[in-house]
Length: 165
Image 1 (cartoon, rainbow, N blue to C red):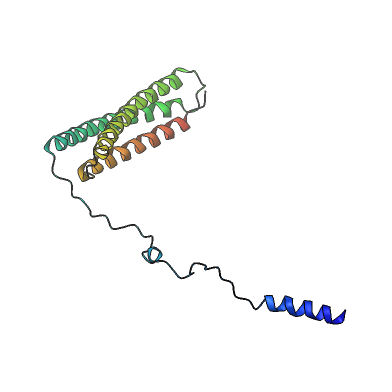
Image 2: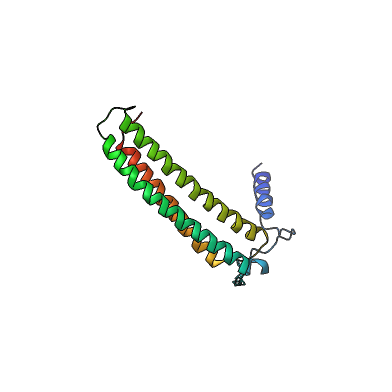
């Protein structure tokens, strides 16, 4: 019995020394893995001058100046109306005058937001045609966005100074 057990253990240990005939792939990096995963450099394309677009941009600049001037004038009136309404009851004549002035400011802000939307449509149309970014268009868009943000902050400040309805 001891011999049979010893023989079984010897045969089992010999099987561990046998060679595997299955071929496995190498674990070395493949050629495609050596290339890297970085995005390729994209050449910058300069926008060609577009007189029609330049005329539209100039028109947007004129409209923005008109809207900013109108808003500033009405903002001074709204500030004065809000100062008169301070401490007055909701629904009083002074409070209603201040709310009316705020409504006028909202109209100016809506016109400025509409101008910003128009610029965004032009930029989106250019992008859809795969045209490069137009620096003057981006510059006037930033001006309009800054004015819209300033108008919103002014309206919020004046609204906060009035008693809530």
